[in-house]
Length: 407
Image 1 (cartoon, helix red, strand yellow):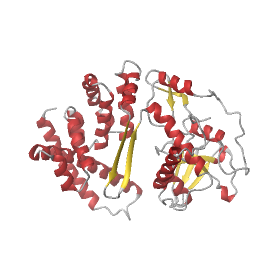
Image 2 (tube, rainbow, N blue to C red):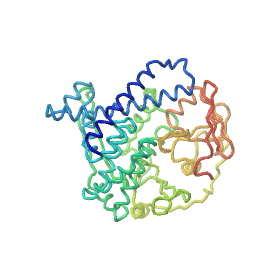
Image 3 (cartoon, helix red, strand yellow):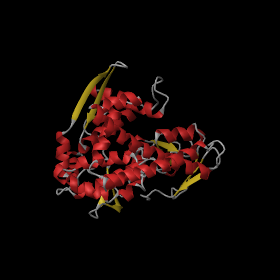
Image 4 (spheres, rainbow, N blue to C red):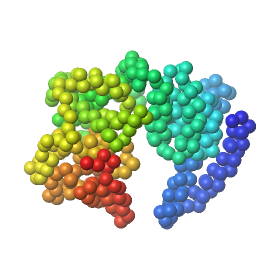
């Protein structure tokens, strides 16, 4: 697409966005019906996407005219230097993707889709990036119709096709790229750290931390824990890491890592997808290394354990958690992407109201949705086939069928 074509798209989209802004300004969400609210939310999303495109164009111009567009943009818009650099990075990515840039300028594709593209391009060797870029240009219509995280999954698939060794070279590169970065936040006076691990290592490190959280806080969390569920989860994870570093961990050796092979969901090679509990890609050959380091190998079609515990204990057993983990890769609420390992096992018929710790009364819920059920007035109904109906405080309902990995 020529520059003049992009300018034409830019001009038309400005008129469209002005019309959308006028519609939003005329809308009173407090009195609008559901259909109007959904329509206005869609319009708002398109405006935000258009603004992403405008910021990219603005960042390019500032960088060209000032020589330090990152700092000028950060100061002018009151965003962090990191956020300003992301804007400039989006511009650099789009320099080789004219069709995707046109879609961003039209408000059809968001900056988050561009970020997903940037990450995908980094997955492949430099010599293969033009091939992946051409593929991205052919998938602009997909980007315009799905959320950014779904588009990223599609790009990961396309990137894997360009690797000749089923991802092994990428894994070795990731292993060489593990890093621990430490710094002092001078605003809050906190020592901070960022740990980057390859997917193979991350699987058992993440599980070890979660196991320690469960061990330390089975009977309750500290009184000074944050009220916000996400902040609380991060606080408990930090305490668990400190416990492990101090040698107070409850179990020695490697933790139990559960991998689910779903025979009904196949990858691009027609093989079952392996879900390890984290949104990471581990080559199939690398799973052999994980199994070789394990003390026991267990293959279970249905766990030979009691899954109906009644009122004998409040917390879900390890066997129950394994079954739920196999059924639900994420929170049971539709479209929630929080992984099972970050969820609480919730009693649909509340324990404090007499509910049993039976498998057909248990669901994984993320911290946000767990609070919505306990404090926000959400009501859940779970049928024997695990069809879930959610009734919201205003009386409306949402029903989702059995999980994709139905027993």
